[in-house]
Image (cartoon, rainbow, N blue to C red; front, top):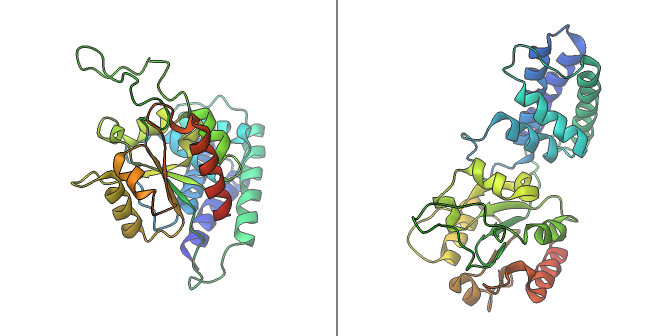
Length: 275
């Protein structure tokens, strides 16, 4: 049995436990959170490193349910269940929890039906988008620090292009994001997920920030993970240079980012080629 099958089987058993045992509200919330978490793990291939130790349970459950392909309502319920995991009592009615677990179980069974039947079959690899923030999701000149050098996230210009990128990625649910931005030096993975807003559920990791250029850091990540399907969206000079010879690098103008029509259409075209 392959890794994905084992994890889905475990999550399936959690969901069955909800149906077969008289569980308290607290235990039910615990069980379905673990099921959603297992779904999340099963949805991320081994080749993609994960650093979610600092991510709240609710965010993990939301990612798990989203990656399983549940509806927006069921994703939100997964988050609520995780938030109430350590509460003495849960506010969600038992009937609603049981109906949710039925839908989770159905999705697991659907995934298992199409899963490889032995570990010798390679699991499908998602396409990775290496994503910069400054000069892509907003103008690179947008202020991140105040006059005292403190981070200020209340600038409305920050992340203003996230909806554009979310729309561009909407037809491609398997796309996962690795943050290549220097913002990873400032914030934890959990905060990066929150800052990405509707793109947060696609986040899987950050690049390693070592000596060298941005394009070199991306290529190191590609090699370390054994990636074959990937794109990079960035305004860094090294990426601009690399984009002249490698179509997987997509350069954005620093003042417009992904709102630039050429950059946006290029991304859409390259995504279509990967399907």
